[in-house]
Image 1 (cartoon, rainbow over the protein chains, first blue to last red):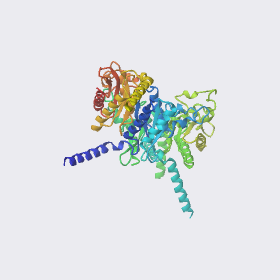
Image 2 (image 1 turned 60 degrees about the vertical axis):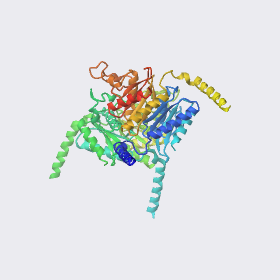
Image 3 (image 1 turned 60 degrees about the horizontal axis):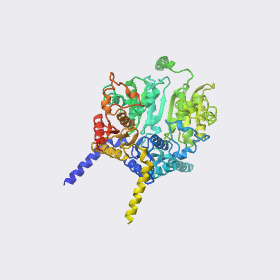
Image 4 (image 1 turned 90 degrees about the vertical axis):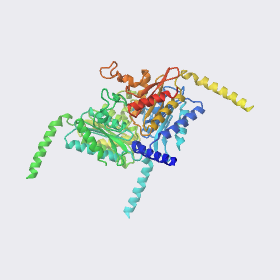
Length: 160
Length: 160
Length: 160
Length: 160
C-alpha cells in the first residue's frame, strides 16, 4: 500500500517537475546525463593511458555543458579544450579536419580570429545521437594531438 | 504526367536535402521562416507607430538568427537589441523583469558584467512555440522602453 | 472625393515622418529596403544551390544592417559572415583579394589582429549603388569559399 | 605468488606515474576527485529541491576545475557560475559578503569592472580543506540567491 502511495507521489512530482522545467531545453539536445557518461569515458581512457587532459563538452547550441580538468593537466588547456568543443560544433566537424584548410594559403586561413578565438588542431569532435543528429561536441586538450583526438572520438561514441 | 514526374523529383530532392542537412538543427528550434515572420511583425508595428528600431532574434541556443536595423534607427541599438535578445534567452524571461532585481541593492545587482555584457531594461522577450517551449528570443531597441517591450511582445506572439 | 482627402493626409504624414527621421541617415546610404532585396537574393541563390549560409549586410558606416542564418547553417559562420561584411567595407574590396596579401610574408600580414578580428578569405564584397559609390558590404559564410564569393557577388548586384 | 608480482608491478607503475605527473600540481590543491564530490553534492541538493543550476568549481589558482549545467538551467548562468567561483577565490570570501561593499557609495564600488568581470551577489563560496586552507571555490547559479548560496555552502562542506 505504501508503495502505491509513494509511486503516485513520485509520478505527481515528476510531472510537476516536467511541467515546471521540461520546456526549458529542446527535446533531443544533449542531456547532463549523457554529458556525464561522455566525460567519464574520456577521463577513463586518459587515465588508462596515463594522459592528463582537460575535457569540455558543449550542447547543440555550443554552450558549455560540462567540464573537468584532471589533476596536473595543463592550465592553458582549459580554454583550448573549451574552444575545441565550440569549434567542432560551430562547424560541425573535427577540429583536425578544419585545421587542414586554415594553414597559410589554405581556403579559410586565419578563421581563428572569428568567434572570440577558435582552435583548429585535433581534439574537437561533434557529438551525435543514434540518428546522426549533432547534439553537441567534445574538446580534449592535454595530450598529443593524436591522443586528444582519439580520446574525443572514443568519448563521443560512448553514448551510441 | 509531367506533374507526376515533377512531384517525384521534388520529393527526391527534398529528401536528399533533408538527408544532407536535416540533422544540423535540432527539431523544434526556431526556423528562419519563423524568424522572418517575427521580424516582419516587429518592423510593421514599429513602422505603423513611426518608431525606428533595431530588431534582433536568437534561437534556442541564444545564437543570432536574424537582424534588421530600420533606416535611421540608432547605431548604438544594434548591440543593445542583440544583447536584449540574448539576455532574454539566457534567463528565460523579459529583460524588463530581470532589470527589477539588477538595481543597486537588488538581488542580482551588476549581473550585466557577465556573459560579455547583458541588457536588463525592457525590450527583450523569449519566443515560445505553441506548446510553451522556449525556442529563442527577440530584442528590440530604438523606441522608448515601453515601445520596445510592446513591439517585442507583439512580434514574439506573431507565430502563435 | 474621399480619395483626395486620403491622399492629402498621406502626403502630409509622409512629410512629417521625413521631417522627424529623414536626417538620421546619410542620403545615399544603404536602406533597409535595399538590404532586404540583397539578403533575399543571397538566400534564394543559396537555396537553389542547396547551400546553407549565414548572410550579413553592413551599411556605409560598416555597421550591421541585416542578417539571416539559414536553418542548419554553421553556428560558427554567424561571426565569420559579419566579419567578412565589415572587412569588405573596412578596406573597400573583396575579402578574397585582401587575403592575397595577408599571408606570411605578405604586405599586410596578420592584419586580422586589428578591428576586433577580420576575415580575409573570400565571401565579403562591397555593395555599390548605380554610380559606383560604396554604400555597404555583404558577407556570406557557410558554403565553400567559391560558393560564398559567388553568392555575395550575385546578391550585391541585385540592387543595380 | 602471482599476487606478489602483480603488487610489485602496481607499486612500480604507481611510482612511475607519480614521478611523471605528481609535481604538476601543488600538494594540497583541490583534486579532481574532491571537485567531483563537491559537484555531485551540489547537484543532489539542487535536484532534491527541484532547482536547476549551473555548478562551477575552481582550484587554488582560481582556474576552472569542473563544471556542470543541469538540464534546463539558465544558459546565462554558465558564465555567472564561473565568475562567482572565480570571484570567491579572487577575494577569499563569499560573493554575497563582497557584494555588500560593491554597492553605490560602498568601499569597492564597481569592482566588477576588474578581472574581465566579477559577480558580487550570493552563490560563490571558498572551498577549504580540513585545516582551513583555501584550496578553491565553488559558484552556483540558477536558483534564487539564497538557494544558490545554500547549495554552495553545503557542497563546499561535503569534503570536510
